[in-house]
Image (cartoon, each protein chain N blue to C red):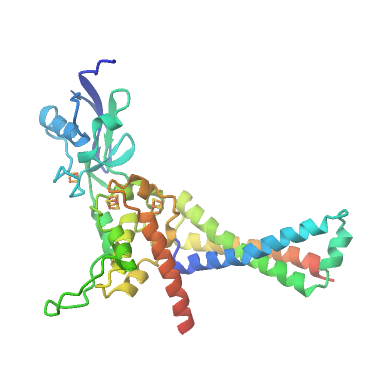
Length: 110
Length: 244
Ligand code: SF4
Ligand code: SF4
Ligand code: FES
């Protein structure tokens, strides 16, 4: 199920996610100081190339990482193999990517 | 002190791959006997048709492993007293392998995977070359030596849930042997080994939960060997990438 290619993709996506998660938490702690409002958040993210790239790469890494993980689980627990498994993996990846991209665009578009 | 009962109740799995069930036997409760002893006693005294496998009886050959109270063990070196519960013992064929009959499993898939993992010697020299001196303290030799005492008993293979859930997975013993071969400076197949353990059934499927290491009767640690393979394949992956 898990060949070297998928294994490396999952490790590398984890390496990308780790600092981004810490960055995300740090910004959340900073942002809620003195109350939280939608305007304040959107004021920071809208039109920002930095936040687009920050959350864009986060979403890409999460989609890859989670799709590979779920692929292993359904193959080991439900016995999915071959083409069905490939389709499942890609479907999870694309759904997560689409949902994430939608969210990133929603907060960064002007 | 509680008196020891004269007999033990032993549940033995009877049947073949197509199906079967447990059959109960009463055997003498001797003070010092192994699981293999009671299986032999049943075959010699109660039911001569009982099928099982053993050879050395001293923990060398790796042919006698069975599930004892649900746990994979080498039966020739498992004392009944150590595993008996309420005067009962349950003995079944090894998990994760097809059953031939009763307690004898077909170990072909186990050995086929050793070959598939390139867990075999790839010679560097011929008989005409002088014998190469190996420093037993060199780091690679220490790694190779750590897995060398494997007796191919398949206990780890039976203990591994990843084998149970993924029939392609090469399993702890085969991968550990691949790691031993990889670290053997007399072996010419290092890249062959890495390629063999990088496919869909390869070392990257291991979840590192260590059932193999817990149950190995020789206290080996296939999980650690597999971690070594993961590192070596990852390094080789980057090297290959930078060459293309
Ligand atoms: S550590 Fe790996 S090889 Fe060992 S039992 Fe777990 S999955 Fe199997
Ligand atoms: S690693 Fe241990 S449990 Fe596995 S086959 Fe070798 S001796 Fe048996
Ligand atoms: S009979 Fe040889 S290891 Fe048990």
